[in-house]
Length: 509
Ligand SMILES: Nc1ncnc2c1ncn2[C@@H]1O[C@H](COP(=O)(O)OP(=O)(O)O)[C@@H](O)[C@H]1O
Ligand SMILES: [Mg+2]
Image 1 (spheres, rainbow, N blue to C red):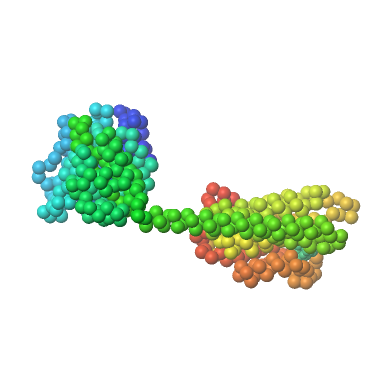
Image 2 (image 1 turned 180 degrees about the vertical axis):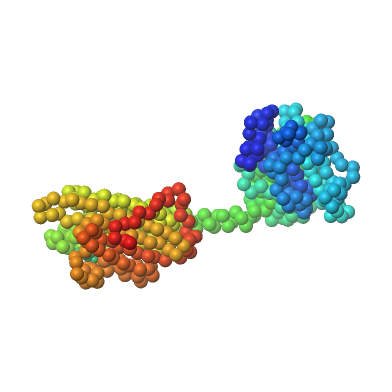
């Protein structure tokens, strides 16, 4: 729809209201195409660069009910007025112009009609309605009803009563189409025609009567809204639910000479759709609720350990409990994130940021200045990857603040920078945790140094996540690099807005 606005921008004579009217037409003219078994093209006045009068195509609609004459997209294309003489006639005579004989110039017989689009008394555009008549058989009752109704809508377009003023197409969500089911009612609300699909839809709702000849109120539990709309000549769309079935109906009053002469009613059964939606919503809510509870339980466990730590005399025991609190809290963070999203995927950037805050807040010796840098974009991760990874990242960050920047003998503390960098590609996720501190104790293999923290980290990465764990260290700092495969590969979407370049952390190359 933005296309129409662009095409019409700054065009003399077309103000905002007129453009709105044309937008409403584009939102609603599928029904005209379907009922007509015809392609629709919307044109506005135009001038070619050499000042030749022309028409610019600003909208195109193909019918669902017939084969299109125009597989190509014509929107934005201009035609000299002489190439489409009927358009000019329709505008000049302000009435629908009909071809008497089919046009054979394209190889198939095409019956064309030009319908002026009237708004506030003025002709503001013109629609051409073009049907391939080669495929037309002797029409059935259904097709005759379609064509007859299409003629009425076309006339309303020329009269300025279609599209409907004050209709809000953006509020329509599951609007039924002609093929979903269609009925005609007369000005009093009595059904004069019902397509097989429309009859079936009402069967689902429990009305077993023959619809033709019945009044809307005899079989539709929400008939009041329909008849009101019919009597005042405004379209209405609403749903009815009964016996577990859901049907959406859209009533389009047919107006001639300011009188409502009847209405078209599109009918679509959406029971399955609604049921599916509800089931999904319920499942989503359940999963979120479970994550919420898991998070609460983990926080309770962490609080209990904290309480217990306070009663202990031994510094070593207290530190051990503090470590457990930290580990449990990092898992709780993942569940908290999962409880806020409607999918089983975590935006790991959010988790990482909160881990950095947690490690920074709780554990940095306030006299040792440590800066944290978060680089790159991990994207979304499935919960089964996010949870262990959160734990690993917590361990590694914690090691940096705990070991990389010791207070010197002269009690000065230079501090430093800790960098957490992500690089996501089709193969998986690379995570680098690096500091510019003192480095690992020299001369010993990682396994020999590792206490519980590094052991947990390594085991989770290698066994749980099926990834690799590499630590390098020098006097310039320590860098741990993890490569973790992510199920689903590149499809874990990376939000484009937040991508930053990944700086190469010290020692990672
Ligand atoms: N970023 C780091 N900078 C310097 N030394 C580190 C770093 N990370 C780990 N270490 C060393 O490795 C040891 C083992 O770490 P870890 O297994 O996490 O156990 P803990 O942290 O409980 O000592 C630490 O005691 C420390 O000597
Ligand atoms: Mg540690």
